Length: 96
Picture 1 (cartoon, helix red, strand yellow):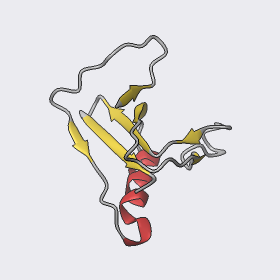
Picture 2 (tube, helix red, strand yellow):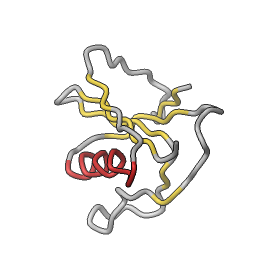
Picture 3 (cartoon, helix red, strand yellow):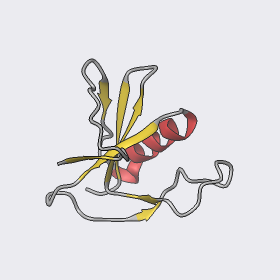
């Protein structure tokens, strides 16, 4: 199930948005490509996917860098980020 990251519990419509999904592959190429897109664009984390069919992992957020002055953030197995300007939603997978 999709779990939104909004403080007020608001639901957003993503009708007309393009969903970009990484392919799980050797060397984590899809994951690295998504990290590159996320680190070079101004996308907001909008939620994560919670499912018993996804391996549970938790790690330090690779996008929380010293340059962004963000500390103590975690990354979950499947996260969603949105760019309103380009009408894109990116899915980042960190587990199979």
